Amino acid sequence: MEGHRERKKARTRRALLEAAVRLFSERGYEQTTVAEIAAAADVAPRTFFAYFASKEEVLFLNAEDRGQIMLEVIAGRKPGEPLGDLLGRMFEALVRSLAEGDELDFALSPLRARLVFTEPALRARGLTLILQEQPVLAGALCEVYPELDPVSAGAAVGSFMGALSVAGLVAQQQGGSNEDVLAAGRRGIEIAVNGLSSLDGS
Image (cartoon, rainbow, N blue to C red):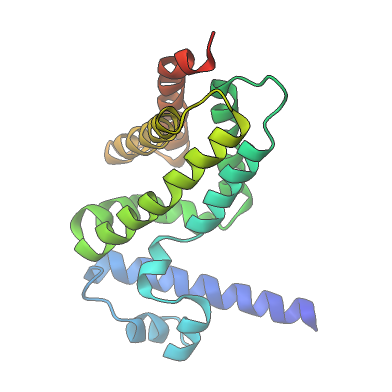
């Protein structure tokens, strides 16, 4: 019985996600209401709120989980592991989480990027997430790399996140596939890591 309930919940969540993505694309983010998303998924509006706190949350799917994944990689630094290698592992862990998670999360990426640039409420949410997450990551780096001062750790995190985000965004804007976006993110991080080599003290 438990398995059936979980499968039903997963189907409902997916139906809500698919409805939201379609309506955001067809009507625009601001013009789409929670009630319309629920109706398109053939559920009551209260059911939507059982899965998502707001329609913003649909576009920032699993953001907190991604942050936790990065923190776990940092906490698991291998003895003597250079900073660049750890950042590379952090990216690969994020890629694995995408591959293992709901593919709709990845499908949302181009829409999310477009809307974040055009919708003030989403820009604010995205900035809030950055301001909350990146200092935490920088603090975690300082704990496992005692030789790093807080400013250098912040620069490392900013370089990593900026390279990953902007390189991937450019690939999306050029019409790249999901694989192209991942390759662009990987290339961006390689460039950032080469610039961060001085922080390893070597």
